[in-house]
Length: 191
Image (cartoon, rainbow, N blue to C red; front, side, top):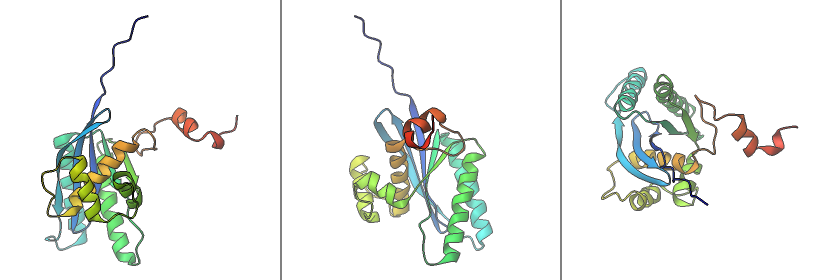
């Protein structure tokens, strides 16, 4: 009885984005099988731009630049949470849409995760604070120190969440196919 040679896990790069109109966090991780490591993280500073339209243009340019530099295999975004301020929600949704457009223009599949799902995936608690998420990421990713802006660690959390759930969710841009849908939803398909 012969053993088949072990297949090496394909290396992938995931770009996580925490959308914002004043600060937009981004985080890149490299994965191979169950292993992962940080490539880079930071924030896109948008406060200095006066008009919302100019902020959207800068988001598109900066996210496009990050994509061109690191060529991620997938992009994961934190979905906007529902708040009382409709104008803030609209602006946040536009910022997220522009980041999505940057990825989709390069045919990179995107996936959205709710803030609760991201926190649950990283800390085990869907109601964790930004500080608790950052502290857990510091441990998981062996970060020497936390960044000044926790929007960056939020973006890393989105990338880690995607890594943990990869293959179990439907991505936008490229379908994972009917076979995986049927396997995951046997009660929704009539035979």
